[in-house]
Amino acid sequence: MNKKNKVGINMMLWTPFVEEKHFPIFNDLKNAGYDGVEIPLFEGDLEHYKKVKEALDDLGLECTTSTACLEDRNLISPDEKCREAALQHLKWAVDCSAILGSEALCGPFHSAPGVLTGKAPSSEEMNWAIKGLRELADYAKGKDVLLTIEYLNRFESHLTNTLAQTVELVEAVGADNLGIHYDTHHAHLEEYSLSEAIQQAGKHIKHVQYSESNRGIPGQGQVNWQENTSALKEIGYEGWVVIEAFTQNDPGIVAALHLWRPLFSSEREVYDAGIALVKKFWS
Image (cartoon, rainbow, N blue to C red; front, side):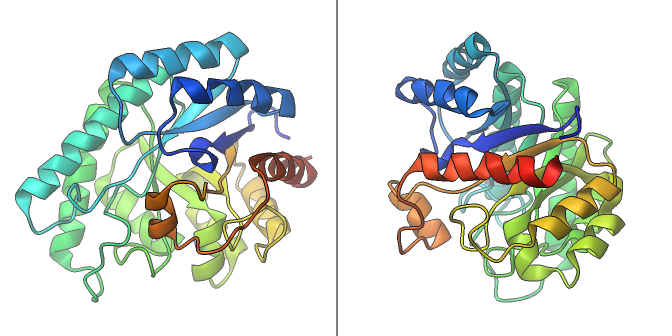
């Protein structure tokens, strides 16, 4: 691994809301060799995340954070109140990230996953996204929080589905604390060439998630890990590499991500395979 790269894992392997009962998992991940965790931000208050921060600090673990727009909190909704609700949610996520000392707030917060119009994005929707992200980036800059937006596959989002489209969006916003969150699962579905897409996006890639083609155990699906890693090395990527897979114990996650069958027998199977894969290709 490059000395500046860190390996994390998204806590959505266990839960969309990290509570005190989940804190013992941090110790397991520390022992497995992880540098930190990715904390999902959808509920809770600032005092709660101070406790999460203390638990991480006790083990010497660092963190990134993730969130998303939702159907009733969507930056590109035609309903102005819905757009404002999205902005308030995202500012709250920035506040939580600042408390946690997060090195990047990532996720699909340019629009709401699964809320599709049946059409390509309109100029109005793009303008709403740019306006909202610009205001959010200005707010996050005052909190010293890096924002990284995740592009999704065409079955989950109509706003942006490729690195090239996401570069256009980021450049249109024009904020130096806004970059791209690159997820191998979505890239596997949408890019013509992973290496060319990564090279063209270059410096805009500020956060990376390693997620398998079927959302299961990293290394047991169809993602081309060698091509992804080689291209990221070529652009000099030095940020986090975060393993992402999802619990099947949360009905909301199962429904949103269409996880209709078991993809692993235990969380440990995922996090052991994940860190082994990252070390294999980044060594």
